[in-house]
Amino acid sequence: MMRNKDTSEYRDDVLTHLKYIKEKVDANFEHLERVNGRLNKAENNITAIKTIGSTLTVVIGIVLTWLGIQQ
Image 1 (cartoon, rainbow, N blue to C red):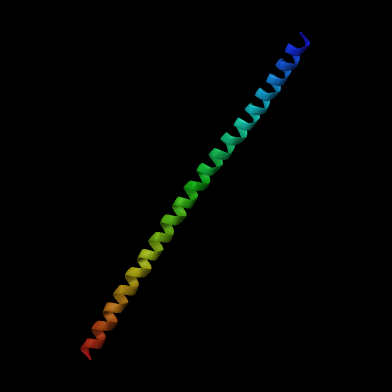
Image 2 (image 1 turned 30 degrees about the horizontal axis):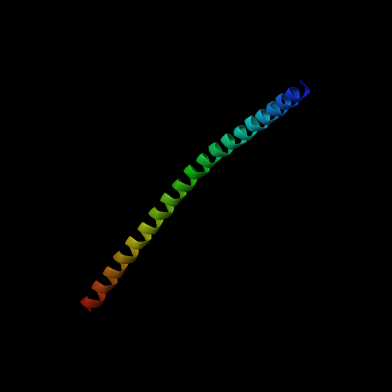
């Protein structure tokens, strides 16, 4: 009889700890979702800036080459 009480208390303690761990894991998952959304947006902005820079470099190169040919 005493042993069943110990087992029951242990089981309750384990379930309490598991619920706590599940809450923390869920909170971390939600936080990571928000962070990943911000990182994706930042990566897209960086890609746009790189694309604009590359395009301007090519256009300036073409214009300078054309001016060099004209002279």
